[in-house]
Image (cartoon, rainbow, N blue to C red; front, side, top):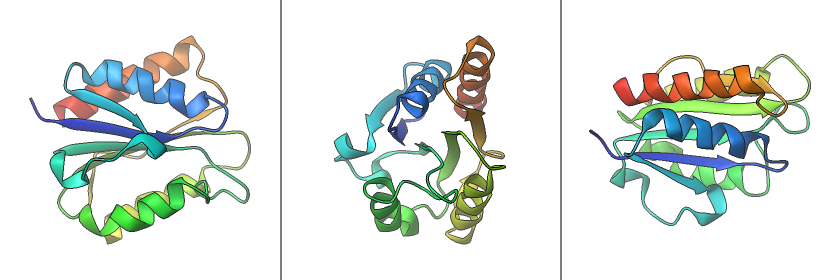
Length: 138
Protein backbone atom coordinates (compact mmCIF):
# COMPACT_ATOMS: atom_id res chain seq x y z
CA UNK A 1 0.00 0.00 0.00
CA UNK A 2 1.03 3.61 -0.31
CA UNK A 3 1.86 6.20 2.32
CA UNK A 4 -1.15 8.49 2.77
CA UNK A 5 -1.46 11.77 4.69
CA UNK A 6 -4.76 13.23 5.84
CA UNK A 7 -4.11 16.91 6.59
CA UNK A 8 -6.94 19.10 7.85
CA UNK A 9 -7.96 22.33 9.54
CA UNK A 10 -10.99 22.33 11.81
CA UNK A 11 -12.38 25.18 13.86
CA UNK A 12 -15.36 23.40 15.42
CA UNK A 13 -14.39 19.74 15.14
CA UNK A 14 -16.60 18.95 12.13
CA UNK A 15 -13.76 18.61 9.63
CA UNK A 16 -11.60 16.82 12.23
CA UNK A 17 -14.34 14.21 12.62
CA UNK A 18 -14.46 13.83 8.83
CA UNK A 19 -10.66 13.43 8.73
CA UNK A 20 -10.72 10.65 11.28
CA UNK A 21 -13.49 8.75 9.47
CA UNK A 22 -11.70 9.14 6.12
CA UNK A 23 -8.49 7.85 7.71
CA UNK A 24 -10.41 4.86 9.11
CA UNK A 25 -11.58 4.11 5.57
CA UNK A 26 -8.05 4.40 4.20
CA UNK A 27 -6.73 2.02 6.84
CA UNK A 28 -3.34 1.50 8.45
CA UNK A 29 -1.45 3.51 5.82
CA UNK A 30 -3.17 6.76 6.83
CA UNK A 31 -1.38 9.33 8.95
CA UNK A 32 -3.65 12.09 10.27
CA UNK A 33 -2.37 15.61 10.95
CA UNK A 34 -3.99 18.89 11.84
CA UNK A 35 -2.44 21.47 9.55
CA UNK A 36 -0.55 23.11 12.43
CA UNK A 37 0.99 19.75 13.39
CA UNK A 38 2.13 18.75 9.90
CA UNK A 39 5.92 19.14 9.76
CA UNK A 40 6.76 16.57 7.09
CA UNK A 41 7.19 17.19 3.40
CA UNK A 42 4.26 16.51 1.04
CA UNK A 43 6.77 14.79 -1.25
CA UNK A 44 7.04 12.04 1.40
CA UNK A 45 3.45 10.94 0.64
CA UNK A 46 2.06 9.20 -2.42
CA UNK A 47 -1.46 10.39 -1.67
CA UNK A 48 -2.80 13.30 0.36
CA UNK A 49 -6.33 14.01 1.51
CA UNK A 50 -6.78 17.67 2.44
CA UNK A 51 -9.64 18.87 4.61
CA UNK A 52 -10.77 22.39 5.33
CA UNK A 53 -14.11 23.89 6.28
CA UNK A 54 -15.78 26.65 4.29
CA UNK A 55 -15.14 30.01 5.89
CA UNK A 56 -16.51 33.51 5.39
CA UNK A 57 -17.58 33.97 1.79
CA UNK A 58 -16.93 30.29 1.00
CA UNK A 59 -13.14 30.34 1.13
CA UNK A 60 -10.50 28.18 2.79
CA UNK A 61 -9.59 29.13 6.36
CA UNK A 62 -7.27 32.13 5.95
CA UNK A 63 -4.97 32.20 9.00
CA UNK A 64 -3.52 28.67 8.96
CA UNK A 65 -4.80 26.54 6.12
CA UNK A 66 -4.61 28.99 3.22
CA UNK A 67 -0.94 29.93 3.87
CA UNK A 68 -0.06 26.23 4.27
CA UNK A 69 -1.84 25.24 1.07
CA UNK A 70 -0.37 28.16 -0.89
CA UNK A 71 3.12 27.05 0.18
CA UNK A 72 2.67 23.43 -0.97
CA UNK A 73 0.24 23.58 -3.90
CA UNK A 74 3.01 23.73 -6.51
CA UNK A 75 4.27 20.40 -5.11
CA UNK A 76 1.02 18.61 -5.99
CA UNK A 77 1.83 17.95 -9.64
CA UNK A 78 1.16 14.28 -10.34
CA UNK A 79 0.16 13.61 -6.72
CA UNK A 80 -3.07 11.74 -5.94
CA UNK A 81 -5.26 14.13 -3.98
CA UNK A 82 -8.66 14.03 -2.29
CA UNK A 83 -10.45 17.05 -0.80
CA UNK A 84 -13.06 17.24 1.95
CA UNK A 85 -14.64 19.66 4.38
CA UNK A 86 -17.70 20.81 6.25
CA UNK A 87 -19.83 23.85 5.65
CA UNK A 88 -22.77 25.62 7.24
CA UNK A 89 -24.03 27.76 4.37
CA UNK A 90 -23.60 28.27 0.65
CA UNK A 91 -23.55 25.71 -2.11
CA UNK A 92 -20.00 24.36 -2.09
CA UNK A 93 -18.29 27.15 -4.06
CA UNK A 94 -15.18 26.89 -1.85
CA UNK A 95 -14.81 23.24 -2.80
CA UNK A 96 -15.27 23.87 -6.54
CA UNK A 97 -12.68 26.68 -6.38
CA UNK A 98 -10.31 24.42 -4.43
CA UNK A 99 -10.71 21.58 -6.93
CA UNK A 100 -9.95 23.95 -9.80
CA UNK A 101 -6.89 25.23 -7.99
CA UNK A 102 -5.58 21.68 -7.47
CA UNK A 103 -6.16 20.79 -11.11
CA UNK A 104 -4.30 23.92 -12.27
CA UNK A 105 -1.35 22.70 -10.19
CA UNK A 106 -1.42 19.26 -11.82
CA UNK A 107 -2.87 17.26 -8.93
CA UNK A 108 -4.70 14.05 -9.79
CA UNK A 109 -8.00 14.54 -7.99
CA UNK A 110 -9.72 11.29 -7.11
CA UNK A 111 -13.23 12.70 -7.62
CA UNK A 112 -15.28 15.68 -6.50
CA UNK A 113 -14.50 16.77 -2.97
CA UNK A 114 -16.65 15.43 -0.16
CA UNK A 115 -18.64 18.11 1.63
CA UNK A 116 -20.96 17.70 4.60
CA UNK A 117 -23.16 20.26 6.30
CA UNK A 118 -22.13 20.52 9.95
CA UNK A 119 -20.95 17.64 12.11
CA UNK A 120 -21.09 14.25 10.38
CA UNK A 121 -24.05 12.19 11.57
CA UNK A 122 -24.08 8.40 11.14
CA UNK A 123 -24.75 8.72 7.39
CA UNK A 124 -22.05 11.39 7.05
CA UNK A 125 -19.54 9.22 8.89
CA UNK A 126 -20.35 6.33 6.55
CA UNK A 127 -19.84 8.65 3.55
CA UNK A 128 -16.46 9.70 4.94
CA UNK A 129 -15.34 6.13 5.55
CA UNK A 130 -16.42 5.09 2.03
CA UNK A 131 -14.59 8.13 0.61
CA UNK A 132 -11.44 6.98 2.45
CA UNK A 133 -11.86 3.45 1.09
CA UNK A 134 -12.13 4.80 -2.46
CA UNK A 135 -9.05 6.96 -1.91
CA UNK A 136 -7.09 3.96 -0.62
CA UNK A 137 -7.98 2.09 -3.82
CA UNK A 138 -7.26 5.10 -6.07
